[in-house]
Picture 1 (cartoon, rainbow, N blue to C red):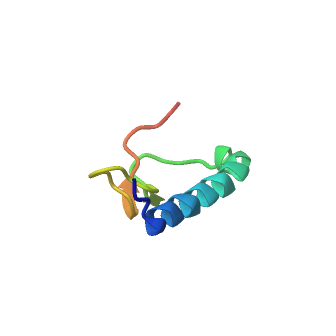
Picture 2: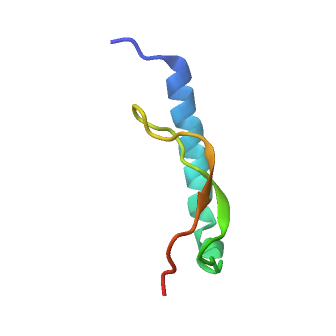
Length: 64
């Protein structure tokens, strides 16, 4: 089985980013998000046809 090195590198980079984001989770919990706001979201590495790059996302529902 051939392993593509660029795919492995992408997975390692995403894992590093995810670990960094997990260290900042306390600050993110304090963030107030309103319905209708637009944020840039990075969806990470996708499998198959999943979204896998930076995309604008809109908040549809409050979590009250």
